[in-house]
Amino acid sequence: MKFAERFKDVKPSGMLKIFQAAEADPEVISLGIGEPDFDTEPDIIDEAARAARAGFTHYGPVQGLPAVRQSVCDYWDRRYGLKSTPEEVQIMAGGIQSAYLALQALLNPGDEVITAEPCFGPYFDQIYQNQGKVVHLATTAEEGFMPSAESLERVITPKSRVLMICSPSNPTGRVMDRARMEGIAKVVEKHDLIALSDEIYDALVYKGNHIPFASIPGMKERTLTMGGLSKSHCMTGWRLGYAIGPAPLIRVMTLLGANQTYGINVSAQMAAKYALDNHDHKTAERAKIFFERLSYCSDRLNAMKGIKCAPPEGAFYLFPDVTGTGLSSEDFAWRLIREAKVAVLPGGAFGECGEGYVRLACTRSMDDLVKAMDRVEEFAKGL
Image (tube, rainbow, N blue to C red; front, top):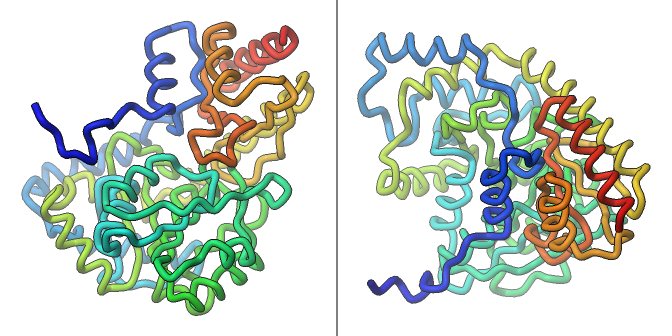
């Protein structure tokens, strides 16, 4: 069978290979996958069942049910003061689809997408699949793994079209402050860029407050805020995400989405509406638990031979520096899973500037995290 030329060499990512290796060995404690270990709250599940019994079993509007889109607006206004209308919101199959549809809507062949790295690795493939060109914007630990206005300015060319940013960050867990956002916003406006701002971890911030990039003056009309309920409301398997952005962009994304998914499960959408309207207290409770886990693991890692780890700021990730072990990120991750039965992701999977680091997702019980840290400590001692 012949495949499209641009996909003939497609291979599993480094992330996927680690996930597969962890799944194959029941003794492995996986700190790899970015999925909360909490189940969806029972009353959210009950709301989906209630909605289905009430007749929410038919096609819904491709853009998403109006009441659900209003709840997205209310959530972001209530928590962060970001004001939007339902016409500026699209409900879709997870936050990852919002990036794909936006790139599909915005890019002409050869247009450049600047990726502030380390970043979520699948975005590289999405850019390629939509005939764009990745421009790697490397960051350093010294600058908190966050881009600066100056570094952004240096990589811009006449082909620059889109900037992709993420705060709280996957994979680093770092949080961008307002001053840095304001500097970046000036460059975005100067060069007529569109910002795709991944804010899926908005509810998990431990240092300062979450600031939507669209709330920075001049950015609302040129920012697509990508969000969802997978991380904040423990609804990964429901495949519910959303985007908030300029209505003209949302309209095009909706037309494109109609040819991919023709809308999203409507009873699940009603469960999402209920969650957005009623579960702020639950997201706060879980954030407290994640912070306790992250703090424990960060302290343990910093006491280990050859490992340094920044304190937690957001999300549920740590991104420790393992260069002191003498191993590359890839070697560290694969030896750790084989010799110590702990799965982590090599930092290079998130961009070249992630080399020397690994990503830990603290999405296991504290008992499991204690066992995992004990195993990592023994492994590090033996290097």
